[in-house]
Length: 113
Length: 110
Image (cartoon, rainbow over all chains, first blue to last red):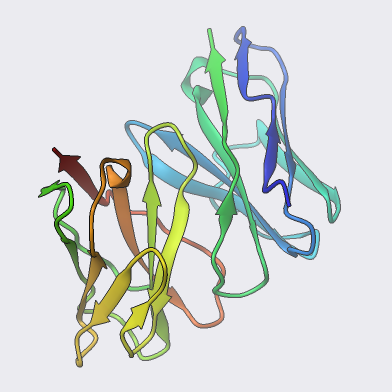
């Protein structure tokens, strides 16, 4: 298996633009997680899905952030409009349901100018 | 989930055992102790987890005290590639969420 795949790996955009991050989980995994990492706040869970259904989105910073999982093999995290403070590395992870090990993707480094 | 406390940094000579401690005095009976690490610029990587008994896999060993209030991750023969931030996380038996703290930055030196 190729592992968790994220795209793009790097994204540079201007403030106010829409940004869409993509994730393909490991085949067979039924839980998917979006994390954000910054120097100031460390690694934070934004939202997670179980069987394509959002279970906990309490970590989503505000309405500018939205996440979808239309099927078991694809998820998106969208920021609209983007702001400089959204600059961070965004990780996607997948696992089997429950307290199982999570497999992380390589991350998307987002820079908003 | 239990609050965990780890030293901010540690050094270890290459080839020696690295022993990374973690305090989790508020851990409940059904909470597992998970260890992940993050090598610079990469996504976190699962290492090992345990509930009550000591565990060993190809990467590391996990020693959990009998009262379960603390644990130690052991890398038996540390290499330069083990330089990373190591996170100790408590997670309940039915949950999926991981709450990362600040971890321990392990520096392996020649």
